[in-house]
Image 1 (tube, rainbow, N blue to C red):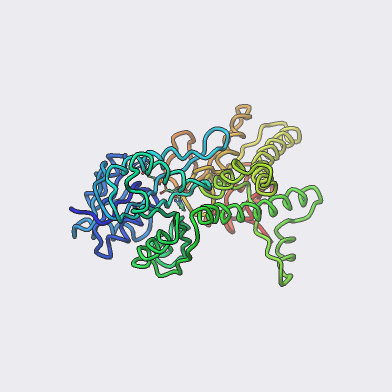
Image 2: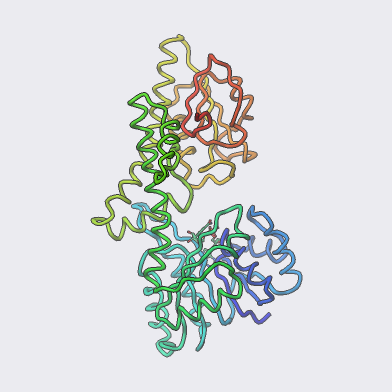
Length: 403
Ligand SMILES: NC(=O)c1ccc[n+]([C@@H]2O[C@H](COP(=O)([O-])OP(=O)(O)OC[C@H]3O[C@@H](n4cnc5c(N)ncnc54)[C@H](O)[C@@H]3O)[C@@H](O)[C@H]2O)c1
């Protein structure tokens, strides 16, 4: 197959993106270093959970518009959709983008379009431009380099890929226009042109904005705990003001975007990013605080009742109704509580996964029935409106019982 588009990275974003493009009868070669992923896709199957994606992949593989490989081949458009994790000190790790770029440099030819979609620290696109021209100086001024971040919400990716507005920043105006013209074939949302640095910062700022707003709610929850005020009721009442919209507190902030991307700003602009950095600290502290509160409650129980309590930890995922545990504050809290445990019994509950490599999971109703202390870490739908006997101690960090 002579591919028109090569996507590097076939994960939560790269695979749906490839499938969408291929569904428009554009020939796509998807590249991943993971042979198992490549084999699964070439059988017309998928390795991630995402509604509607299986059907589309099966169709585009069988009609020949999509194929996966561990090796890239020549195309007209290259999309880089590999992970951008952080290193030990919360510094962004762009080595995956670098490796993916190096892999396609020998294939580039005049007129090609190279786009980074991975969430990236500011300056990454320029850095890759330098990397490309250092080994292929003859291409300077002849290829188009751009950055176009992804904003999809897992669970609704196929819809959002098409409908969301996109921010597209080229290294120069010609690259921006070329990239806009490429996406316009597949995206119905508006395509907003800018430069690469602004587009990179835009993605980081979107997630930092969410993080800062959640930190405000989490800070309120700490204040209200001390002031003996129900934070859920307070926020509900404050939000009756026509220009106030406070988010809901939780047991921290998790996931691979909101809990990660702000560090890409803090790491590069530490002096200037006071609020963004503090928000990260507040949200991390909230998880630590929850773990300490649980510990304290358990000690109080033992003092009062002369026996150790049984504790149910309700939820491990990073947000309600999903099976994703990446950077999950609930998982962190469970870990801390178990570390400090003195042989008392705990029931770990996560209704969205069948089993866990570390934790023995308990069915949620059984856990609630057996526990003395029931701790709601995540507001999964199964937990809403659960009937819990009056004598049990309820610790609600997720708003399951909010007024
Ligand atoms: N998942 C989301 O909801 C989401 C939303 C917006 C933005 N993003 C961003 O998109 C990027 C990709 O995220 P994801 O969730 O799809 O990641 P992922 O971990 O699901 O998938 C990445 C894939 O890239 C592959 N890979 C790594 N290095 C490679 C290389 N050199 N060559 C070929 N394949 C390689 C991995 O094997 C993996 O399958 C990240 O920067 C992420 O922050 C993700």
